[in-house]
Length: 572
Image 1: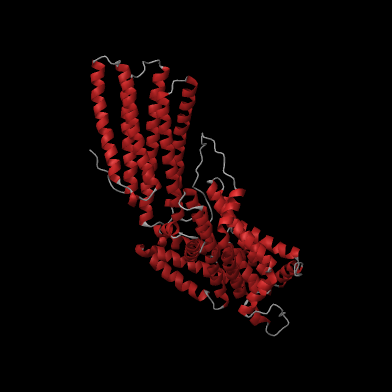
Image 2: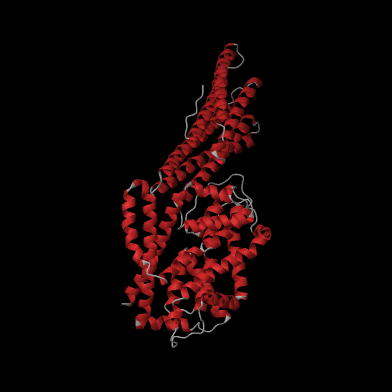
């Protein structure tokens, strides 16, 4: 019997976590690009940043999702560190809504809503235009089903004599109010949240244990404080390997809650007494008293109120010290000294239990931006290779270009595999179109890498084959052609790194036309120069190979722009 209760407890916890994840994903799908726009634009000062984080988190029901998205924005340079800190503070307030939803289980039987939600949800799921709403209802239903089952299981634990005796005996060792007992529950709340990666799930367990009388309210409050620290670990794990600013934002997330828990521990008793007086809960009533059951029914509301008041107070205090928090995290997290060779790794694509398609598409978008920048750096190396005379430096530079070619192949494969995984989820038509466009973009970017490598090989064959050097006119023309290619790449990176609504596609069209016209001009000039014995036919062939690869590179750039803009670029 006891074993079945444990499995029921674990199963109800899994239902709760799945419901939270499904509900969060559906809400983010419904919000779509507007969610990113809100986070990116409504952070003009610390107060709007807090409000933005609060409302977004309350809407998507996941402070983890909001924090991860904020760290991603910092990583991409879309938010400053100070803006990110204010958004994270707001997310701490927004996440308290979840605790209030859970406290509803003690006000009325939420399981009465479960099966109507399932029924309406399945109808909407089969209506393609309302599928996301159906997914949201299923998430809500699973959430309430998990909460209800968890509560029933908690009472079953109390009713089971063997389990009740075991649990009561365990917690009796920590009944005495002292520093070490408080620290134990604080530590346990942190570790459990870290392991489960969901503060909501641990909050639900805490409410269940307290509402059944197994856990004293003081111990439950220490668990809640520990959950506030544990929930910050996910962002710090995700930030490993990202930019310095992103790691600082994640560390600020941890610092804010550690500072908050510190002052809460100092003022714990008067703070808890204030919360209990607001709710009308008497901490001194014992199981032998007549009003014990009525008093115990208020425990979940006490925990939800404490959670809200703690986060609101912590934000109201620390919002005035955002510049100081920023300086502190900058001192702790030092910039990395990166090797110029740039060993292959994906900077933005990460994994996590709360990953959603919307966040995944954002990460892939930024990774493609990094891919495009690498390709422009690779092209710059080819330009340097053309004029390099020293053999040692030439060979070193050529080896770097070969390495970048390998990187481009691996990046295409890794990003494509990631997008395929994202594509397996239930996606909106808009998100599916974005993924198709991204797959085309990475294919064309890899082709840019191939064009660069082909130019480098041509230059290497000429260098090591002891062919005649290009004359000054040829060098000048190739450099002009490569200059046009570099302009095209700069335009492409400007588009990928910015908003396509602000991009002037005519600039890309003009550069492409200029490249094509110049290629035709050089082709005719090359035939004339060979006939006039300005240089040999072999040198002319190598010369035109470079010109033609530059023209192909321009075509690939246009293809990337077309994929990103969703429109065909018309050129002569």
